[in-house]
Image (cartoon, rainbow over all chains, first blue to last red):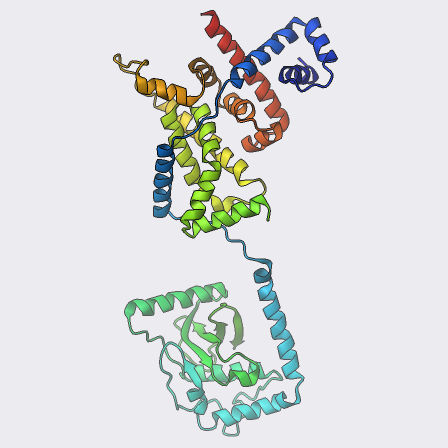
Length: 263
Length: 182
């Protein structure tokens, strides 16, 4: 039978045709069509008697109890769709940072030279180590950074126009001088947990082959347009002895974003 | 808020261990899910098992629910697939035959037949159909879903659904006719 004929017979059996003339003519002219029509009518009549199936209250209670119990032992995973403003927050934060940097750099009070002076003020007596808070343990505070010259200029004489870059260079030089703390969490488990977290963060920052040697926040970071509450992981190549040529990387501990690489 | 969005919110609450949300989702769909399972499985106990398995699967896979269809359509599809799985397992492990002393006139058995809301010969005819035809008839002619809705639930084109319903009814009528003539 053709598709059109099947549809006609079905519609006639269901009683949904406005004009039954064509369908009636079809079953009158074809024995096969008539048998199909009667089959459809028989099935529909039998199915029309079917009552809706309902569960008893006891069955429902049992179903709820058993399902809930099973769910509690194996929790549900639901995709939590972040609201649009959350998804855009990273972009907004990046834009804000860029605008902030441009603003800072265009402000007279923060020219490159003055930033250098600021560093001088901090670093002359080694006090910058005291200003650097070590999150995971105590810093070797008070030790003067050997790479910082007495006049406050950076030892490598490579001060950039960007005070933030200079800032991280300064901190990197202190790291190379050993002025950072390794994680000294009180409990071994806690220490391992911190290390695992740091390792995962470095991997997220594509820093395979690096290890975190400390986690710091900089009390004087605000002077350079940075958030003083932001913690940074200090990472160096794994198992490499610290020296003048050691690359030092700073990664934001919260976002695992690579902030600065000093090589 | 759309129905799909409400369903998504409810599912998220279930994931957070909200018992009220869980009860709300279950109550909204349990009768129809059970009905679909009962008509496909043809056995109350197995239908109850399939209903529970359906909700467990739905809650566990809730993160895959994208809201493209309603939660109802999605959960009925899970129900049908769960029943298919159980029927396949049943086929591999045929159940024990009824003992000789089993009396179908037993009051509790009679009660169960009445509670099923379907004549035994019709249930037998329905059970004789392949799962594809059976589910098409159950969704379309027993549960009263529209052809597009039933097609979406089974994940087939509307044309395929029309064909399955037509042929399913034909086979059902043949089976009922044979029963009447014997």
